[in-house]
Length: 242
Image (tube, rainbow, N blue to C red):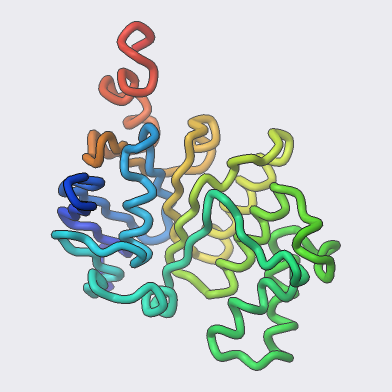
């Protein structure tokens, strides 16, 4: 087994004349939570899209558990154990909560009856048991975030990419979401990479961090080391506050 579950090596992504990522390195150890930080336009979503296979690097390489997946399709990466959530949730609003999760399970080739029972497990795990057979359109923003997690979990990932998982969630519900994410790592053994603007959230969640600005890596290290780095404080807070 490779030392890192995920290796992003010198990845550059260009869209015409725009350099969205410039020789970015990211190395994620199994069983840890890594935060991707940076201001708007830093390249965080592009990095997620490159790992998930939605965009392909102009140059550089991406490996999962030591195997090159740089040119692999998103469907292949999903089968290999990469799942992601999105900042703006998009459930199938006409389906029930359980049926939304069943879609992910059936895509693995599981029979409908088995998928129904398996979906119930994931729905209960994320705390949506009472909403099991209600339409997804009835869910609050926080509940839709939980449904996103259940749908991702149903693909049986080894690596989970979380995009602004607390975005739009009411403040009292955030600790429960964070506890759920920690359980995914500690109880399910899932390695997590998270994009999140809320620094307070990340201090309670992330082991490691990478700070991006204008498509480049500024600093990597522990969450505390990155948060206290002079360049990070300057970019986030401005020279006066730094």
